[in-house]
Amino acid sequence: MPLHILGILVVGGIAGVAVLLHLLGLSRVRRFGDEAAARAAWAAEFPDIPANRAVLCRNRAAALIETPQGPGVVWPMGADSTARFLTGARIARSRDGLTIRLPDYTAPRIRLTLDPDEAEAWLTDLEKTA
Image (cartoon, rainbow, N blue to C red; front, side, top):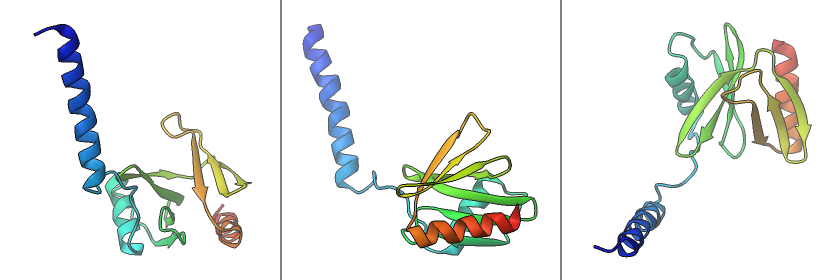
C-alpha cells in the first residue's frame, strides 16, 4: 500500500474515533452531581484523608474541600477529575472567578470559573482555614 494512502487512512481513522466519541457524549467535561460526588473524587486522589466538607461551585465544575490536614480543591480534567491540597497556594481573583497558583509542577495553576459572590465566599472560607 502506498504511504500516502496509509497516512490518509490513519488520519481518517483517528478523526473518525474522535468524532464518534464526541457524538456519543464521551468528550463532555465532568460535573459533580452533588457533594458526595465531589467527596468521592477527593477520595480517589487521597483515600487516606477524609473530606469533612465539600462546597460545590454553582456550575458544579469544582469543589472546595475541607480536610483535617487543610483545605483542598477538586476540579475536572476532561472526563476525569483531580484534586490538590491548597497548602502554600497563592489565590487571586480573576475576571471570571479565582486563579490558584500551587507550588506543584504537576498542577501549577488552576483557573476556577465562579460568580463574583461565590468567589468571595470561597476566599472567605479559605481565610478561615488558613
